[in-house]
Image (cartoon, rainbow, N blue to C red):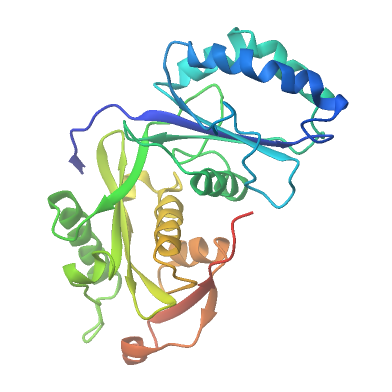
Length: 308
């Protein structure tokens, strides 16, 4: 595996919950009145970087969900320890202990993930991380406070001619050649231009600074794109890195106004098939170049709906 020299990743968090009453209702008055002092504690905490807010100084006016009473909070910190100290060892601790007074029980959700220094996450990314955690549980891509903090994982844009990415693709090609050794087996290729915006996007997963996975989408038409070159190093399989790469590709597709993703995988790649099915992909008839490999190809599709 190729080790990439990068700055130490920072920590992003999102938490959401649904109020028992509107923010200006007497039921939630004490919560509203404490927002400014509690946010001031965050702003002055060691390791604090950024928090989501409007000109009002907080995020209560941001409607990220269908229910207008569901509030969203996001922030970035230098480390897990810095956020933990704020949440559990500052005045915020008592605020958390009383949350059932103001929020509907069972509506609270939160997730933590790594970001490159200088990155400000968008609300849709936070919502996607919540959904990812709900579907896959804890992983280096999205996690919660716990006894063991996972190694930092970043999934970022790359190019098909990037040295570390080239190495991953070559290992993918070798694996496919071993898995499908019969004469005439198709190992479909991809050119660099087809995964550069606006034609597509390629991403690479780096775990603790080591490149361990990749994937790409190439745009087929105004509404569809194809997932390509999905690969995870065998030493890190089981850490849900393939799911993380796929999640990032879906986010990139949405940025390109793509409403449906399609893909091909081999009939012998059982782990890949399981990954796509869990992520909501359904089988679809073979198409295009995959018609030439009816015995070794499976095709899938997934409409990209709204995030929850």
